[in-house]
Figure 1: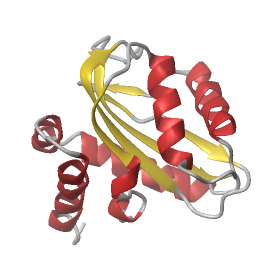
Figure 2: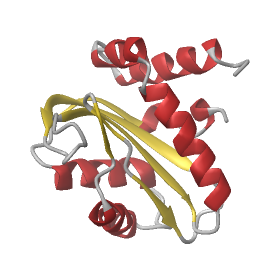
Figure 3: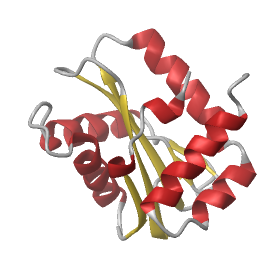
Amino acid sequence: MNIANLLAPERTRCGATATSKKRCLELLSELLTGDDADPSTRAVFESLISRERLGSTGLGKGVALPHARAPGIDQATAALLRLDKPVDFDAIDRQPVDLLFALLVPEHSTDEHLRILARLAEMFSDPDLCERLRTCGSETELYETVLAWQDSRSGS
Protein backbone atom coordinates (compact mmCIF):
# COMPACT_ATOMS: atom_id res chain seq x y z
CA MET A 1 0.00 0.00 0.00
CA ASN A 2 1.64 3.20 -1.20
CA ILE A 3 0.50 5.98 1.12
CA ALA A 4 2.23 8.63 -0.99
CA ASN A 5 -0.23 7.89 -3.83
CA LEU A 6 -3.10 9.03 -1.60
CA LEU A 7 -1.55 12.36 -0.74
CA ALA A 8 -0.73 15.42 -2.84
CA PRO A 9 1.24 18.56 -1.99
CA GLU A 10 -1.93 20.67 -2.16
CA ARG A 11 -3.50 18.46 0.54
CA THR A 12 -0.78 19.15 3.10
CA ARG A 13 -0.59 22.01 5.60
CA CYS A 14 2.41 22.85 7.73
CA GLY A 15 2.06 24.97 10.86
CA ALA A 16 -1.73 25.30 10.70
CA THR A 17 -3.59 26.94 13.55
CA ALA A 18 -6.50 25.18 15.22
CA THR A 19 -7.73 25.32 18.80
CA SER A 20 -10.09 22.33 18.84
CA LYS A 21 -10.69 18.88 17.44
CA LYS A 22 -13.67 20.27 15.51
CA ARG A 23 -11.54 22.94 13.82
CA CYS A 24 -8.92 20.33 12.90
CA LEU A 25 -11.60 18.23 11.23
CA GLU A 26 -12.91 21.30 9.38
CA LEU A 27 -9.41 22.07 8.06
CA LEU A 28 -8.91 18.45 7.01
CA SER A 29 -12.30 18.43 5.27
CA GLU A 30 -11.28 21.50 3.29
CA LEU A 31 -8.00 19.87 2.29
CA LEU A 32 -9.69 16.60 1.30
CA THR A 33 -12.27 18.25 -0.95
CA GLY A 34 -10.27 21.15 -2.38
CA ASP A 35 -12.24 22.74 -5.18
CA ASP A 36 -14.30 19.63 -5.85
CA ALA A 37 -18.02 19.89 -5.21
CA ASP A 38 -18.47 16.13 -4.83
CA PRO A 39 -18.37 15.28 -2.04
CA SER A 40 -18.89 18.63 -0.42
CA THR A 41 -16.64 19.89 2.35
CA ARG A 42 -19.62 19.82 4.70
CA ALA A 43 -20.42 16.18 3.85
CA VAL A 44 -16.81 15.15 4.47
CA PHE A 45 -16.76 17.07 7.75
CA GLU A 46 -19.98 15.33 8.86
CA SER A 47 -18.49 11.95 7.96
CA LEU A 48 -15.33 12.64 9.96
CA ILE A 49 -17.33 13.92 12.95
CA SER A 50 -19.60 10.86 12.84
CA ARG A 51 -16.56 8.58 12.90
CA GLU A 52 -15.06 10.51 15.84
CA ARG A 53 -18.29 10.01 17.79
CA LEU A 54 -17.64 6.26 17.64
CA GLY A 55 -14.28 6.80 19.35
CA SER A 56 -11.32 9.08 19.00
CA THR A 57 -8.93 8.48 16.14
CA GLY A 58 -6.12 9.91 18.27
CA LEU A 59 -3.47 7.17 18.27
CA GLY A 60 -1.27 8.70 20.92
CA LYS A 61 2.16 10.32 20.86
CA GLY A 62 0.68 13.42 19.20
CA VAL A 63 -0.83 11.62 16.19
CA ALA A 64 -4.42 11.27 14.97
CA LEU A 65 -5.77 9.41 11.93
CA PRO A 66 -9.26 10.76 11.26
CA HIS A 67 -10.96 8.66 8.60
CA ALA A 68 -14.34 8.11 7.00
CA ARG A 69 -16.15 6.58 4.06
CA ALA A 70 -17.78 8.89 1.58
CA PRO A 71 -20.33 8.32 -1.17
CA GLY A 72 -19.54 9.81 -4.54
CA ILE A 73 -15.79 9.17 -4.61
CA ASP A 74 -14.10 6.38 -6.54
CA GLN A 75 -10.67 6.34 -4.92
CA ALA A 76 -9.11 6.90 -1.53
CA THR A 77 -7.59 10.29 -0.81
CA ALA A 78 -5.68 11.73 2.12
CA ALA A 79 -4.63 14.99 3.73
CA LEU A 80 -1.82 15.76 6.16
CA LEU A 81 -1.93 18.55 8.71
CA ARG A 82 0.83 19.64 11.10
CA LEU A 83 -0.41 22.06 13.70
CA ASP A 84 1.64 24.92 15.09
CA LYS A 85 0.38 24.01 18.59
CA PRO A 86 -1.06 20.65 19.67
CA VAL A 87 -4.77 20.36 20.51
CA ASP A 88 -6.75 17.99 22.68
CA PHE A 89 -8.04 15.18 20.48
CA ASP A 90 -9.21 12.72 23.15
CA ALA A 91 -6.25 10.51 22.25
CA ILE A 92 -5.77 7.19 23.97
CA ASP A 93 -2.72 8.49 25.89
CA ARG A 94 -4.49 11.80 26.68
CA GLN A 95 -1.67 13.71 24.97
CA PRO A 96 -2.52 16.57 22.60
CA VAL A 97 -2.19 16.01 18.86
CA ASP A 98 -0.13 17.98 16.35
CA LEU A 99 0.11 15.51 13.44
CA LEU A 100 -3.14 14.58 11.68
CA PHE A 101 -3.39 12.35 8.65
CA ALA A 102 -6.96 12.17 7.36
CA LEU A 103 -8.22 9.44 5.07
CA LEU A 104 -11.35 9.44 2.94
CA VAL A 105 -12.30 6.21 1.16
CA PRO A 106 -15.14 5.20 -1.15
CA GLU A 107 -18.23 4.00 0.67
CA HIS A 108 -17.75 0.38 -0.46
CA SER A 109 -13.99 0.07 0.28
CA THR A 110 -13.93 -1.95 3.49
CA ASP A 111 -10.80 -4.06 2.82
CA GLU A 112 -8.85 -1.21 1.24
CA HIS A 113 -9.83 1.07 4.13
CA LEU A 114 -8.44 -1.39 6.68
CA ARG A 115 -5.22 -1.99 4.71
CA ILE A 116 -4.57 1.75 4.43
CA LEU A 117 -5.24 2.32 8.13
CA ALA A 118 -2.84 -0.49 9.03
CA ARG A 119 -0.15 1.07 6.85
CA LEU A 120 -0.77 4.50 8.37
CA ALA A 121 -0.53 3.05 11.88
CA GLU A 122 2.84 1.53 10.89
CA MET A 123 3.97 4.82 9.39
CA PHE A 124 3.06 6.95 12.39
CA SER A 125 4.51 4.47 14.87
CA ASP A 126 7.93 5.43 13.49
CA PRO A 127 9.21 8.03 16.00
CA ASP A 128 11.91 9.25 13.58
CA LEU A 129 9.33 10.00 10.90
CA CYS A 130 7.10 11.84 13.36
CA GLU A 131 10.03 13.94 14.54
CA ARG A 132 10.98 14.80 10.94
CA LEU A 133 7.37 15.78 10.19
CA ARG A 134 7.31 18.01 13.26
CA THR A 135 10.39 19.92 12.08
CA CYS A 136 9.23 20.48 8.49
CA GLY A 137 9.08 24.13 7.49
CA SER A 138 6.77 23.91 4.46
CA GLU A 139 4.01 21.90 2.82
CA THR A 140 6.47 20.68 0.20
CA GLU A 141 8.87 19.45 2.85
CA LEU A 142 6.03 17.73 4.71
CA TYR A 143 4.91 15.95 1.53
CA GLU A 144 8.46 14.99 0.55
CA THR A 145 9.09 13.57 4.03
CA VAL A 146 6.14 11.19 3.55
CA LEU A 147 7.46 10.26 0.10
CA ALA A 148 10.92 9.57 1.50
CA TRP A 149 9.47 7.35 4.25
CA GLN A 150 7.41 5.45 1.68
CA ASP A 151 10.42 5.03 -0.61
CA SER A 152 12.50 3.68 2.28
CA ARG A 153 9.80 1.05 2.92
CA SER A 154 9.04 0.19 -0.71
CA GLY A 155 10.04 -3.41 -0.12
CA SER A 156 7.65 -3.77 2.84
